[in-house]
Amino acid sequence: MELLIVIAIILTILAVALPKVNQAKMSANELSVTKQIGTIHTGQAQYNSQFGKFAIAMSELGPPPSGAASATAADLIPNDLASGKKNGFTFQMQGTPGGYTITANPDAYNGTGRRSFYSDQTLVIRNNWGPEPATASSPEIK
Image: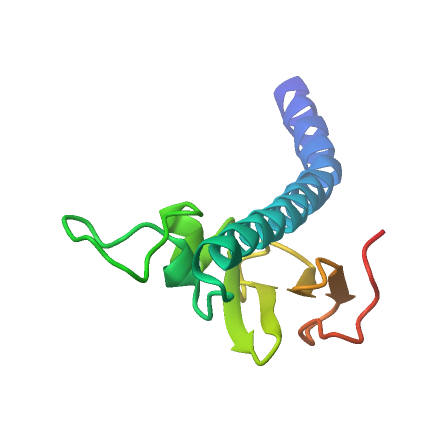
């Protein structure tokens, strides 16, 4: 009987603590995403300085394919980020006439984040709470 009471107490503590752990993990993932966007911005600045234009694809900022030299791969960001998937988020970059845009959206159904992110060559990071992706008109992270 006493063992059942101890087990019930442990299960109650777990039921209270588990949501807080998941929220902390999501917050950590989201903070990491803002840092990764900063890494992309730094890579874009270096790429622009070297080539006189912004990269239009993440692969241009990443390392060249193994065993091959590539004029389009500048090796400015890590391979996992250049692949577009990191920390449970999908990163996409598109070239625009005057620069580039970056979006980072949480992967569906795995609880990696509650927000999506948007940024461009202005270096301002914007976010949106909810299922809609962040855009240029989303609130700025301060």
